[in-house]
Structure formats: C-alpha cells, structure tokens
Image 1 (cartoon, helix red, strand yellow):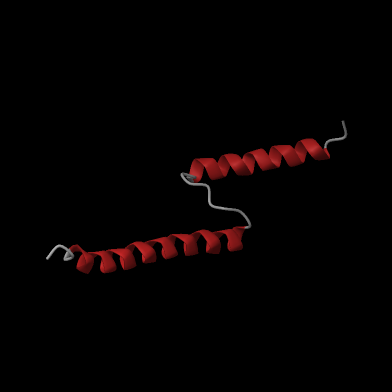
Image 2: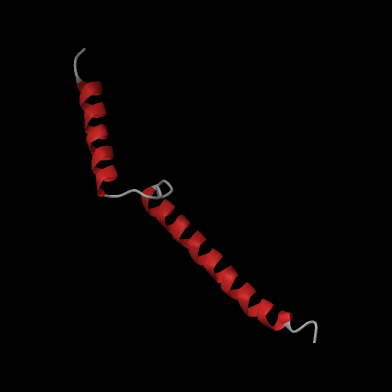
Length: 65
C-alpha cells in the first residue's frame, strides 16, 4: 500500500516530459525560423521600436559625417 503513489508518478512524469519537449520544440523552431531566440514579453510596441531603432542606426551609418 505504501507504493501506491508510483501509479501516479509514471503518468505525471510522462506529462511533464511532454511539456518540456513541446517547450523546447517551440524554442528551436522559432530560433531556426528567425535566427535568434524569442524575446519573452515582446509585444507590438517593442517590435515597432526595434524597427524604428534599426532604421535610425542604418540612417546614421549611411550619413556622410
């Protein structure tokens, strides 16, 4: 009777393992598609600011100063 908890440990281990596999698959698929890891918490504002910063840096680099 004391080892009854083992009946629940196997399914819980399988569930936890599959959650880890799914999370890592998302990470590697995103990294392969975009060339860098996903920035957690990146919303539309952050994306717009990254685009703006990239344009400003390119514009500054191409200016004849």
